[in-house]
Amino acid sequence: MSPSIRRLAEGITFFLLTCLFATIGYVIVGWNVMDAIYMVTITIFGVGYGEVHPIETPQLRLMTILLIVFGYGSAIYTGGGLVQMLMEGEINRALNNRRMTKGIEELRDHAIVCGFGRAGSILVKNLQAAGKPFVVIDQDDEKLTAAEQMHCLVLQGNATEDDVLLSAGVQHASVLATVLPDDAANVFITLTARVLNPEVEIIARAEHPATEKKLLRSGATHVVSPAVIGGRRMAQLITHPSREELLADPEKNEQLQHELSQIGLQIHEVAVSNLLAGHPVGDITSTVDHKFLIVAVQRQEGEVEVDPALDCMLEAGDALVVLARGEQPPQLTVKPKSSSEILYRGAKIAVSL
Image 1 (cartoon, helix red, strand yellow):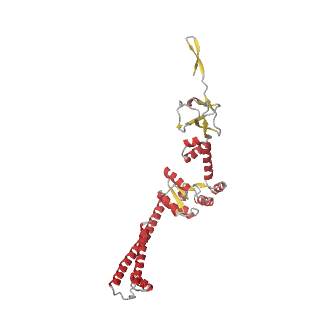
Image 2 (cartoon, rainbow, N blue to C red):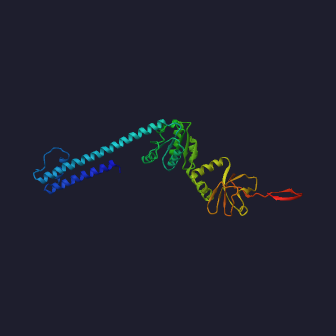
Image 3 (tube, rainbow, N blue to C red):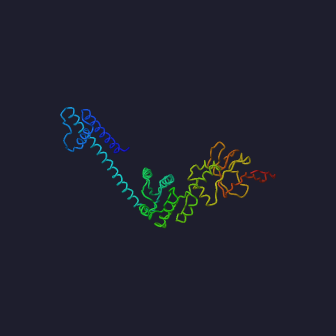
């Protein structure tokens, strides 16, 4: 509870208690309830009407004096709390609007994030880490407050409306990301943004796979489906646990896998067979002409050795994290030891290399 609201609540409570005790006091001295309430009312509000009954005894005069003092005091205290609350709200609103408007007008080549839910907050954190200027659009006061606490530039409004996107500087933005959980809203935002700025890059979220084509036809540059990404992530955890432990950051891992797949590369996990056990990493090769790179060694105990040295010895139960081309992991074996003959004092000697 803010100080102004707490002050207002305290003032109202004290004012009501003052009226209650004064009314009870007048009733105790023999007045009826209606006369007591009337006397309290005209006394506190200073109407100036005559007294209901003569105030002649010292007790009545003292009680009336206390009623005037505490009644006026509590009323002034309550009024001060109300004025403070109104002034704070208006001043803060004016300062926030001025700050947000001024900041947005100065942005160029920035990003616009439509929606500050779970996906939007993750996106904002990454934009902040990358130093990319951006503005957040949302209709929810609580979400905007949370965004402001993260020192974000925010704008309250419906991102499907032209005026809101123009206020966010869509005509000067380099990218717009609409990450609302509502596919229909994302489609409308995409259409509106594409009309207002044909050059802006639009990244749209799709909850349902069928929406992806609609978003692309509406002008989206890229479409991201959390369901698809989540399914791939779960599959990776099931089929490649050691690889996930090595690449612990989910976002970097997803980005790395996507970038590698664009050039035909894939990260595989290959168990160390009895054939490979007891040999160093430098002796490992493939059964066919299949180029590969050993990225890490997953020990049976759970330890991961990243970028292992050539003399790193392999043991049964270990696993190799291998980067190679194609969907299938390479078939690994041990390099055959070659032999050559040298002439030593007239005799041929076979030397194993």
